[in-house]
Image 1 (cartoon, rainbow, N blue to C red):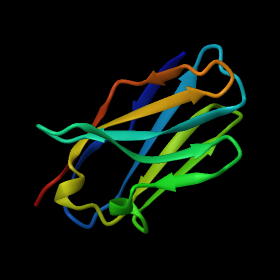
Image 2 (image 1 turned 90 degrees about the vertical axis):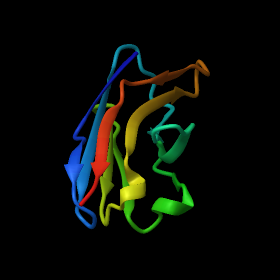
Image 3 (image 1 turned 90 degrees about the horizontal axis):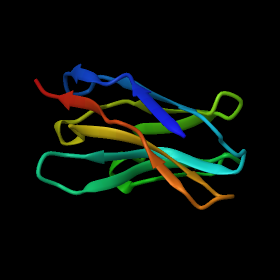
Length: 116
């Protein structure tokens, strides 16, 4: 399974970005997709995730600003980010966890920089 993320960039505080991540390969329908992020000098943390049945989970710091969604047919997960803050600056990694096999996959990151 391979994951290809896109949509990162540099924005000013308060602006928006939308990240996309497409998974390819042998993918079973029962899975979890989402996003981690890693800021400089910090550990990688979960940002948001959504199961194939549509159940979403967010870290408290992004609730109300970020929305995770997915296209199950095309094995794609999105992260719509509004009201970006400098503390959202990080490399964002998408992931897929296959419930059937128990395996997890991590994509290459995409940089998000929020600065005035």
